[in-house]
Image (cartoon, rainbow, N blue to C red):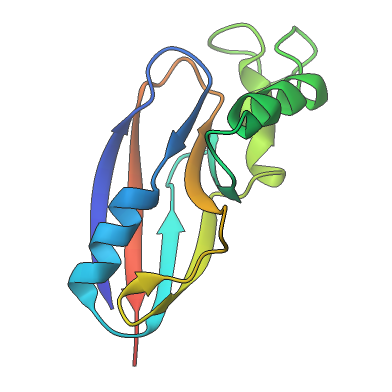
Length: 135
């Protein structure tokens, strides 16, 4: 197994951050067939395979805003208003995803991208672990 950790700055707003190029670069260096595992070791972020750049980013954030409103209903209440919802989000968008790799290339669908989803406006710095598993 080969691994790399990358740093992502998400800033002070909710964010959908495209990781596809970093993932593609990593598996190209690894070469061959296998599986790419993408993991974010944070309790308030997730990894999604989703179409990006066509409005889906904003649609996803809007849907999460409706499902998990940034208000005072959350028992986990430290940090910014509605911070507890960021701790619930990984149950809906898990902290990891696995993508097949064929001949050093991500075997994603035509419109699929790998994205970091971050609702936590209190933590602007994220780490993402990329792991390539092959035989």
